[in-house]
Length: 475
Image 1 (cartoon, rainbow, N blue to C red):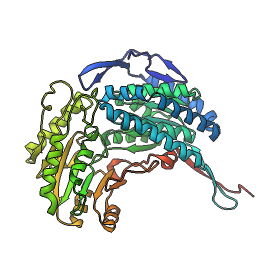
Image 2 (cartoon, helix red, strand yellow):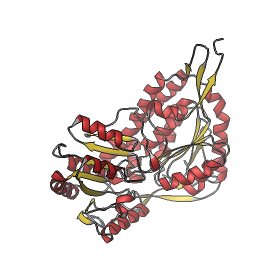
Image 3 (cartoon, rainbow, N blue to C red):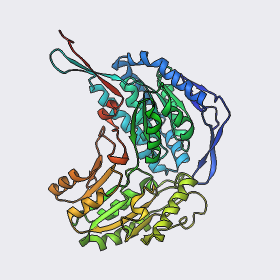
Image 4 (cartoon, helix red, strand yellow):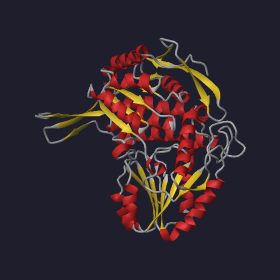
């Protein structure tokens, strides 16, 4: 892909104001797969200006007209799903099966969920017989998305923002920008008015920082690392704009003695999915002591049976890590686990056998991990898991909550009352139990340093709205 489609501003593709090219690397083979241009401050300002100019008119567009455009977008998205799958597979290393079913599928699933939620959404609701509560779009929104689930996060931000009546500037990750460029083609083909949706490629220190501090941006919605989330919050503070954050995680998977037989193996597979590059991955597995020895054997076998291969291949394998930087980070943390005294049960440093090119990591499991160790505390964002025993329910609740993060925790038990009781005490925005997935439109977000926003369905739309009280409405 050439760099002629870098910025989508005010309803058209525009050339960068300055030449600042960046190569996009295919992580499966370490070769350049595309070249994009990074935006300058002039590009950022042009996109914000376009969104500001379009806001008043878009905010006044009827729900019926907005719904028609969203349904058209869903039609375009589904028709070009294979194009999107290939873009994601090449840019961030998602294997073909994962790219089609989950990476692309997450986008269409959330888009349909937002359409359903928007159809039923009431912007004006009576508070009393004479007072009305109005929900109105906050304004111009900067949407900064990550590389690990590109369509999941772009759709979770763009769609509710424009449904709410906001206008947006999207900055997709510069590591995986091809999917963002393709999504911009979809928005153009669907026919959204000029300026409602804008996209500028750039990195965090450049376009990301410019959007966060921009006085004409009313809100920033960011998904990424907790470190970057803190920087964005500080940058946004001078203008007191709203900041919605979906950040990292260090999920606990609690396996009680009465869990199903294959719960440990299932937990390992869930951790390694997307090569461990998910903020909600269950990376700390706590197993009741009576089943711990069995879990060690199951998890070891699961890790060793997990195939690692290039993203271009079909099948149920995992692909590479997204970049050389991410590869080096994961390798360093695996080595730190060894150096700090954890026992290496499976995997380890280096690439898997037979793969000497590409950012491939070995599915790795540690035992004898203690809370003072780096691998216990830090989000690794790779196929690395810690396996630990526990004695009592009280103990494991304390262990699970012993983290600055609070995104997703997991519980495996056939005891319904125990499952509910423990779920209430876990300090996280989501608790998945017994492998039961979350419903369409369910609120996605975390506690503590995992963020402060909620995405999905009605909750996602409400993120982009102001609430206004009007007295004497019917007097």
